[in-house]
Image (cartoon, rainbow over all chains, first blue to last red; front, side, top):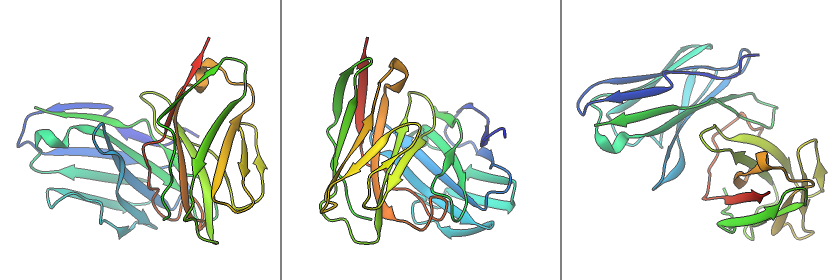
Length: 113
Length: 113
């Protein structure tokens, strides 16, 4: 299996621009998670989906952030408009009920200038 | 989820056993202890989990005290590739894929040649 796939791996954009991060979970997994990592705040859960339905988005920092999962094999995290404080590494992870592990992707390194 | 306390950093000589402690004095009866690690510039990786019995897998051993208020992750023969941040997470054992993980600051383990 290819594991969790994230794209792009690196993104540099200017403040005010729209940013879209993409994730392909491991085939057959029914849970998908978006995390953000910064030096100041560490690893934080932003939102997670079960069977393509958002379950908990309490970690989404503000309305500028939105996430969708149109099908079992694809999810997006969108930031519009982006701000310099959104600069971070964004990780996607997937897992399954009955399994004890989440599998993380390699992350997208976002820099907002 | 109950909170955990870990030392911020530890050193260990290559080839020796690395013992990483974690305190979780407020753990509830239905909460498991999970360990993940994050190697530099990679996504977190699941290591092991347990409820009250000691556990061992190909990566590590987990020793949980009888009162369950603390645990120790043991890497039996540490290599340079084990240098990473190790996270101890306490959570209800619905299955690792069921809901999100709450990461603390973890322990930065440095394996010395």
